[in-house]
Length: 343
Image (tube, rainbow, N blue to C red; front, side, top):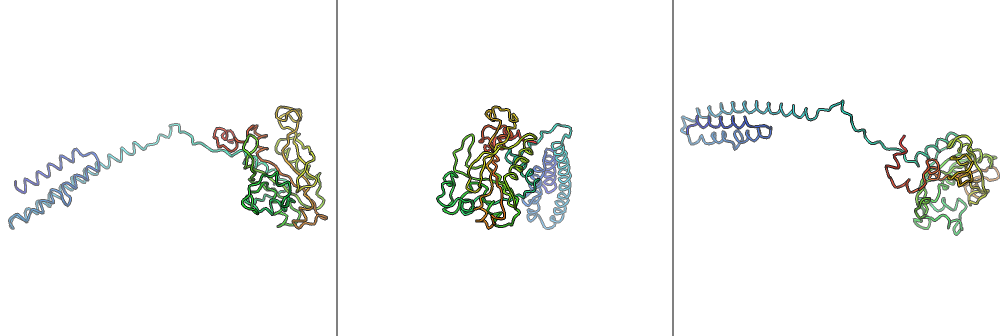
């Protein structure tokens, strides 16, 4: 078979295969097969050494002309295939803006965060400053400066997680009282929200991890009437008009006198119901006047200054506010439960 016939055969074969090609990948396969380094047309060039010297120029010209024509045909087909593929891709990727879309799921604030934000807003509105402190605390701040020295029986009631003899997971946010009084001069008016830890068994009303908000006021002539007025303002802000406080005697080492504080039941407004067990009152927090020993240990002259402190359990407030009967629901991360608090 002569050179001319061989080139015509390659031309016919390539044209036929290009006619059946339907993708850019197939086009590339044909290019490599016919025009590549090991392609059929390149093989003709390599075989020119077997021709007579006088026939080589003409054969080389024929092969080069064939390469140009075949390359042009291949590029035209490749452009056609690419245009078709682009058009098909655009059809696949077209967005119907009139089609109703599935809305993304939106998260919600946790009820503990909701209550914390409400309390922070309430107390900052009364001039309190927000302080935060370490959750891994020195025994010195967690107990000793709170008038709970080593071997004090009150330590047994705290069910403390000890890291070592001098480091604990804080059992209350009260250490921030000491930190505030040691680093500031009166007047002091701060609230300290945060997580606290006690070695409690998990049940409907207890958890080893929970949240408190400590409040502290130190100034001249501070008394129980100031404490009650502050807590009455807090109660009305949180639950509405007509909610007031009731103080019952209690004992805390860091306050003297100490009191348990009840609020008018927000469900029945004092008439008696299932929520308050018919009493009209619900216990929500502990409070009292700062023990003079605590003031003195923190470098504040108790003959000149006095103060009050209170500690609010945020889980307790959240459960009362939202009618939650089991504390465990607050920590299990069930989106069906948490979704109810979406704004």
